[in-house]
Length: 166
Image (cartoon, rainbow, N blue to C red; front, top):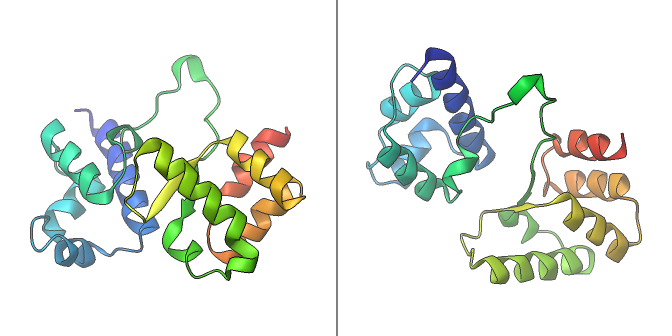
């Protein structure tokens, strides 16, 4: 594994961990010692190579598909893809139902269709955001701002919407 690839993989691992609100020690505690903070940290820095098996196990621990952890390739210098739209389902559960009811039902439907019940995060597509904007009678960019203010979407989602508007 090249040093640059290891660093990119590590950055993805760190992004997923921090998105889930976990410190390195939090990973060790949550995994009951299965994942040592020092080992995960060395993966994240790119100092230590991770096997495919361990990467699959770490993806399972985080509740994300393995491909979400792999650095993207941009052949021929293609533009970087827009950031993923990832709903924080744990924060969504704390938004009052009169505000978040339609989003909660929509997310539950996607989880049911995918058989994905990890309950922490849910990736949605641009089309899903456009559909939700219609449901909420708002533009995708206004809805994105609302979801960010609720803490349900990361601020990086603005770039995804800006990319869509371009």
